[in-house]
Length: 192
Image (cartoon, one colour):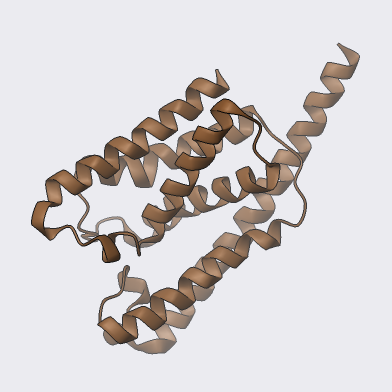
């Protein structure tokens, strides 16, 4: 069941990526496309899912994928819903809603103990720095809430702080839930 769920995640991400590239055609810009957190987190989750089909993947790596996907879904629904993110509807739905739900469900069905959830924050922080530096150089930002040209750096700082709080809360929740559910499962198996 878990391996099937992981294959579904992989196939959905691949189908959304292929769909995006085909539908966008000449408008597809690889450097910009792979500068979206949504794309990077989905690709990371797909690779983790693929590896998990064939061999065990570190709980820390799985937990990071769950955090990034949960945040992708929540930030989309809280900050980007209704904003044209220039993503065709099928890919938008798959990458922002379906895959995040499936990755979180997979974690809850096959939970693991994790430690040092805060280390998962290194990638989002590096992504923020990359987006702001690159954006100031090329004049393009992946998300409206990161674009200082519209509301200034104060608004970007507040938006970034909001997203950082979401990352911290979700990181703690992912680690806590994984650890508690894994302990419960171990107790049931040892008494069963």
